[in-house]
Image: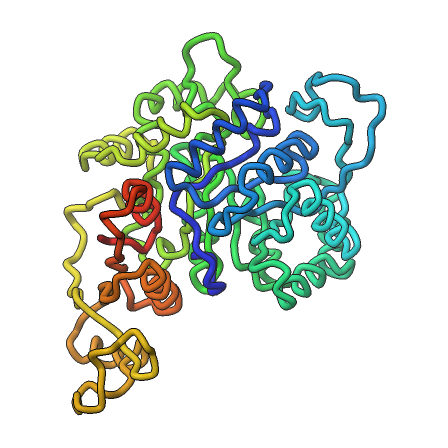
Length: 442
């Protein structure tokens, strides 16, 4: 769930930088096949940006998701694309092999944000996007220019523009899309962020976000989307073979070679299990909404799903910690030292004003009243239960969405048992779509 917006995303999403020809060219047919495979598999979140191929990724994403009302799309602001007539082929520029004849220019001001949003809608061919992320703000990108660019967001009205778009429901949420943590803390002092898309800073190579950022997000109600789980590729490609190894969108520092040589066998199996590493930090875990690896082929979509479903033994995590690859403070998937939790495991809510509760009539004297989350909370405390599980009663997927919305707004809800029509032709797709939702328990 994205903050308190009521907007939900699947645990796995598609990072669409590769569809902007990051590092290598992806044909239009392959890009279309990639997104088609992702949507068919149940992915319901796609992240793109004007910078990804200088508009190429946005065009491809828009063509794929147009008409799919249940797909959440995020794009980014902070760069405007200016015409570059000198560009005549797909020679590499800024890491992208894109033929799109545009050049990016930074602009985080009020006008810059508004122009970027409007231009993205046109490139996407969509009437709206759900999430806008301020792209690559911070000292890591701008170095000595950091204060000047950050001032565009604050005194220059960039945050004001985003707040107006959110208040007017033109977007559902906004936040940052960055590769560093320091600027996230800085931005939180000036605006309420619904989400931080943090790329490359919560992986097998780095878990520094645990120290301050994740706790700060838990306090502010900001969710985290994990981007770049392979640190731009080095954790996926490994250190063998002849392919160029990338780290943080550049050639790798040599100091990482020994770490990656050690961790590579494990990396692919673990990159999509980062949420469970935080099971001892429950407030932070609830803030993690999705993991979005960059996916540039239908084959990668299938591999991602296979890895996502793979069970990982406890000894594996302990071995990572013993070898210094995972911080000792990170909990593993099913920690044997975890404390037992009392769970109220079968809970319904009801309301006499709803038409779909035909059994709830005035003759049911004890039940003919509203029973909602506000009624349950004190009963849980009295019983010593840490959380409850909401169980579907109505044969409707809309009811499942209703339970998801309740769960998002109440910390004492530990999960949802949803409903799927097993006689539907696309039952496999429906089950997968629900299973990818972070609040689904059954």
